[in-house]
Amino acid sequence: MVKRNWEAYLVQTLRKPEIIEIARREGKVTVDMLVDHFGVTPQTIRRDLTELAESGQLERVHGGAILPSATVNIAYMERQELNLSSKVDIARACVKHIPNDCSLFLNIGTTTEAVAAELHRHTGLLIVTNNLNIANNLSHTSEAEVVVTGGDLRRADGGLVGAVARETVSRFRFDYAVIGCSALHQEGDILDFDTREVGVSQAIISRSDKIILVADTSKFERKAPLKIAGLSEIDTFITDAQPPAEFVVACKSSGTEIIVA
Image 1 (spheres, one colour):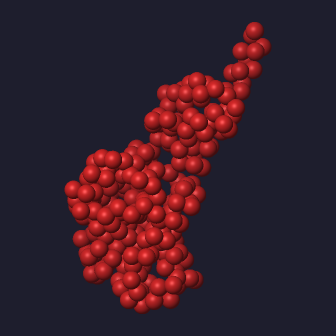
Image 2 (spheres, rainbow, N blue to C red; image 1 turned 135 degrees about the horizontal axis):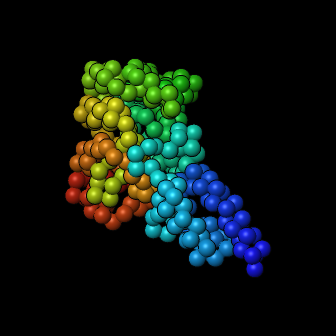
Image 3 (cartoon, helix red, strand yellow; image 1 turned 90 degrees about the vertical axis):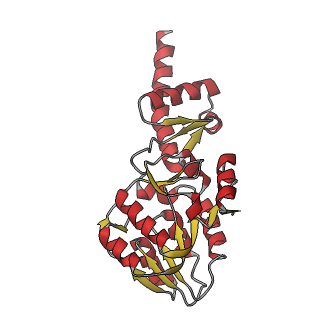
């Protein structure tokens, strides 16, 4: 009996780090997913998730768990891999709404980077960005005129933030802005982590005629402490699946178009 208990404890100890790794890779783990992966009972997985939540390593959500990210964002390299196919679908839907011969701002984010990658067939674009990854990618794939804002370099993800970035934005008037975010609240708040980035995003919104928000629905399962804007400031929301009902109602109330890629 003692041997069997020790073996069960050892298996559980080895299983937990793998659960966390799956959560980092996928953005979320579900009970059903982990039952299939490990070949154990739902009760066993629920117990694992509860213990990981109690230790602060995961945060329980309906049907599973996510990484605890209320104040700190997921690492950039991990965000690049999260929901990658959904980001490509969103990007392809987004560029259909951007005409040739216009001015466009693309802000920080892996989904906006996916949008930039899909603009290679457009002509006559002036693209301004505070995302060094976008600027570098466009230099190889697009004939667009590209302007980089300048600002404080956030080494973690190649973002340019702060007063200099805001000042650059204020010198332009954009036909379109494509923005991403770190989290979405069901009542309609668009959220992020860095006050310097939020300030730049708010400046972008104030200087753009049409605002397109691009974010996959996993952002409803995440938390971030700072509000960028509300839905009344967003013209179009492009995502990968039907949003929560409360958010859909908020979009209708604000006149925000929802496009499911």
